[in-house]
Every structure is written in C-alpha cells, then in structure tokens.
Length: 308
Image (cartoon, rainbow, N blue to C red; front, side):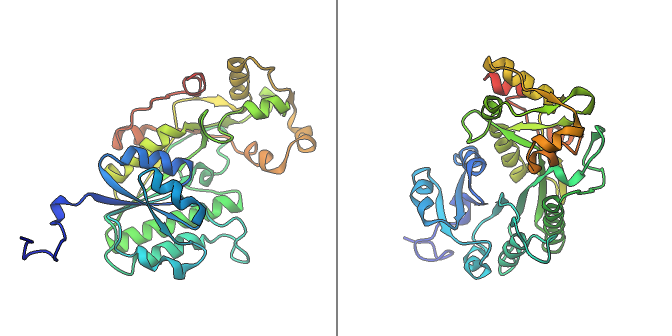
C-alpha cells in the first residue's frame, strides 16, 4: 500500500538519490558525472539535441535548455539538490562586456523555487591577473587583465551574492590549464609538432595545470565539502615555467624541444590568444583545496599526468 505521507507512487525522501545538475556537460562534466554517478542521479543541461542520446547512454538525465535563452530554463527551478556550473561566459557579450549574462540567467531560474543546497562554479585563475611570478593564494585580490577574466569575476560575484541571499553554499574553483591524454587538445603534442615557439628563459612566465580527472574529483569534493561562499585554487603541485612545461612534454614524447624566442619578437610569431597567456605569471597555492576539500591528486605534477 502507498504511504499516506507521500504522493501516490512517490518514494519518501530518504529513499531518493540526491540529484546533481551539471550545467555545461562537456569533457570535464562527463568526468564529473563518472565521479558522482554511484551516489547520485546526475542531470545534464544541454542546448544541443544531438547530445541527448550520448548523455543518456552515459547514464545521465538530459535536460534541454539554453543559457542564452532564459525562457528555456524555467524547469530547472527546484529540480536539483546541488548544481555544478561549468558553462563559460559568452564570448561576445556586446556592450556590457564585463557581464556574464549566462550565469545571471541560471541564477534567476534557480531562484524561482527552493534554492539548491550547494552550487559549485568552475572559474579561471585568470581572475588574479599578472602576479609577476608570485605565489598566489585565494585571499589575493582579483585583478583581471582581460575581458574574459573580467566576466569570470562578475560570475563569481553573482554566485556568492546568490549564496548569501538564498542560503546556498556556493563554492568557486579557480582553474588553470586543463590537460589529459584522452581529452581533445589535452596535451602539448600537436603544438610541439607545429614547432610553435616559447619564450626564452629570462622572459618566461610561470604556468599552472590540473589533470582533467583530478579536476573532476575536486569538483565532486566541492559538491559535498565546499565551504559557504569560498574560493579554491584547483591546481596540481607543479611549479614550472611555460617553456619548461613544453620541454618536459617534448622529452617525454621523444619530440624536438620548441624554439625559444625573446618577448620582443614573440608578437610577430605567436597568435594573440597565446600571447595573452604569456603576459601573466603566477604560482598557485593549492593548500586550501587539499585541506578543506580533502582532494588527493592522482597526478600531482604534469610529469605524472603526461607520462601516465
């Protein structure tokens, strides 16, 4: 007989699996779902009907919706106990170039009913700007130098304001370069084959990395253990300059090391996007991630990850 304490056919709350909504379920989102799946029911927001069969085949519940169309997001309200927001800001946001309208649309939809218990956002370490090689902890003030980093700062502020107003425990993971051998463009191999130059040692910048599987584990940990309105550097233990990273990869792959060029001539030989990364130098401190989220890295350094 059905219980008279619950709707006909519904299960009491203690028998239902926690529902986690992943917004922006690309490569990292699928890895995260793999981490979460044994314990929770994973819902995935997608704007592409072509992805629905793939998501279902991987055991996820696909939901149609588009962050650029707020009217399509109404069904998300009250649907999930916890939310992981992996979608990037719009690339060309128009006149208000510093705003992340996608995050704004998502939060407005979540406000329509009971807010989720936890919301995790994947940001970027670019919010710190150029730190001239200094060791950087989460308490450092953000100083974004690019429009895309400014939009990330806007998203972080929206998330934390939402958390304070709704009681949702919001966590921001600030993420550096993501790599993995089974990820599209996830290793330096293609760039090494092209012979793309890197900066000479005296002009070079520190760069930071995280293996895609370790990132998924950090995101999963934040879903359960992230502290309210808290930011975390989701980085491995490597302390490498960019040129040294490519030299290491070249040696592991048995390929020629890339040529080194002075910064004064790099502008003539490298694309603008790559030059923008070469204009910022910082070493991330990941102590808070390890201590509070209790993340144990499977690939503590890029040598471990690339060799594996």
